[in-house]
Image (cartoon, rainbow, N blue to C red):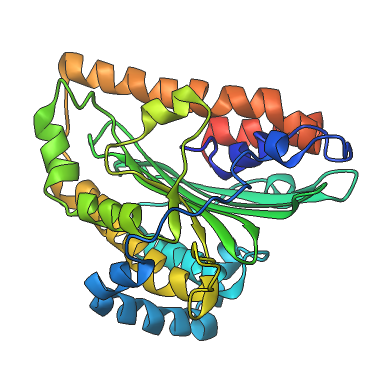
Length: 340
């Protein structure tokens, strides 16, 4: 969703990084945090999902000690501990549940690890394609780390799941964008592949009956979470009605910090919400998704192509050279086109 999706987030800032004349609002308009009046808190999110949160805590511990094989696939080295462990845990779930459906990654070394000549931007994009007969087009995992004037360090981590025409289930998008130790932009969504006005049954199957709306409402009501609205209209058109797109800050309106800091919010609120999203997505692949044919299949294919070309590839081609140079940009676009 937010472009490839992590790559394009960073490319939305990809004005030349050495030019300190760009202000915070130009480089990253969402950096300025204006907390909403207290209306509850992210503690309420955790209370509603406490059992899942405890499962998250246990799984995060196991990931720290026994998840190295998944981290080698693609780690998230610049995120703080809680965010890193959550993203590695979510990546491990995808690897485990989809192991029989995915090929080994054939992403070139120059795409798995790259940096710009100035040394203030680096990243990794790793792609696994779906096996023949599976419902997976590809899974993309990526991270970007940039040092920007005034703003400082920007860390972006992404998990994206793109499905093929063997199912009408939505695409998966999970993204962490951290602009400091106490600020996080969170994107959690299942991108609809059908027009929800013309297909109310699709809306009910994947969004109304899955409990995703209650999670979105929890984040909406939390005093530490402020809605984030992308300035790009095309991206807003891709989102579902249950999309969680918010800025989370440790500081409440009173200036008093949330107990345990942002790490606690990530572990006890973000983690269970992200796991619920992945659970719904996997059920869509294996249970609730349907195979379509005829005109409906052609429409689905056309929508998928538009998402990948207009929503991702065109932005990669035009923006990424500014940050990493044309050669690296060409390699990343080529890997994305091949989907492996």
